[in-house]
Image 1 (cartoon, rainbow, N blue to C red):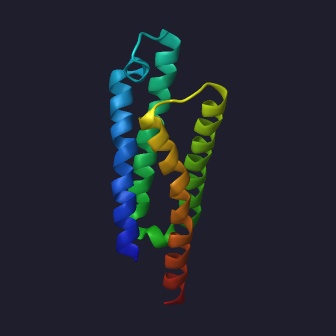
Image 2 (image 1 turned 60 degrees about the vertical axis):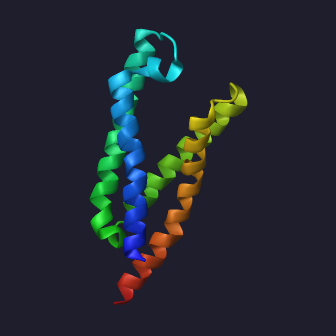
Image 3 (image 1 turned 45 degrees about the horizontal axis):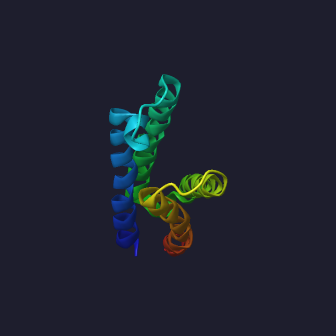
Length: 127
């Protein structure tokens, strides 16, 4: 059970790692497909560093995932809120495209990790 959660989190952590590297290196123009203002590009690259921080936090938690209940819930809560922000944008601005839909689905589905980790933590606390 622990190994399965570690593998899932390890694989999922590759997404923010790749996005962070891509977005910092390519800037907002890569996503927009057109030139953007310097202010938007700067903000986009800055916020993309949080993808790398997210990756680092996940990697820090993975070895002892059963003991990191609070940080994991905070992290998943933040990612879930990001999905809600994407959904709000969808309603306000329009359809973002298939890649961003996929991201939103992952952000919403990640909430299922919370009960999985809770069961694991409870099992470990009994031993």
